[in-house]
Image 1: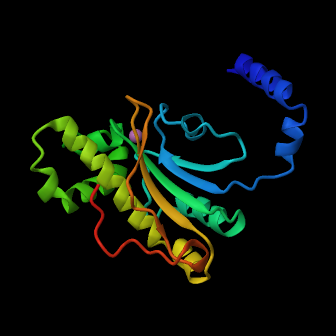
Image 2: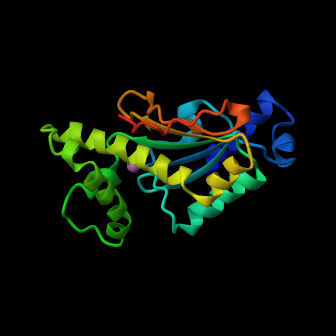
Length: 208
Ligand code: CO
């Protein structure tokens, strides 16, 4: 990794001799990314973006939990100080956290975290239980988990207050496929202010 760091410095300076000087001046990323901690889903690489462009928060199974001070601090800083325009919850198919939440096996401390995903399952059990194929059912729960966490995000006091103030802020839900590299938009984008067209898309329940 340290060798890789030297290569990164050399390559960056080759492209732009002021690369690090510019970044050191401060950040103004337009996006907050809330994604899974999975090593295969790095925000910048899969969206072909650069350092300085995405503010990132990652945890197991890209959860937005109202009592999580870590997530709330990141969200508050991103919305109120950095004034990001978009918050994107990005899940991914084959998510170990989601799959673990579908079993009754104990995994340790993480079980308490996964509890929230079990709640998402319970909420959508009538539809999920109809899906015979296990992988298909896992994929669907991954999608529901993103949608529910987009809801959670919208309901935080931080996002509610931003909308109240008329701050341009949109919330989105995406799912990434590790198998194909494709990001699927779950079409639950939500924004509620004049600058973004007064659109509030939560009138009908989302159908992922
Ligand atoms: Co995951």
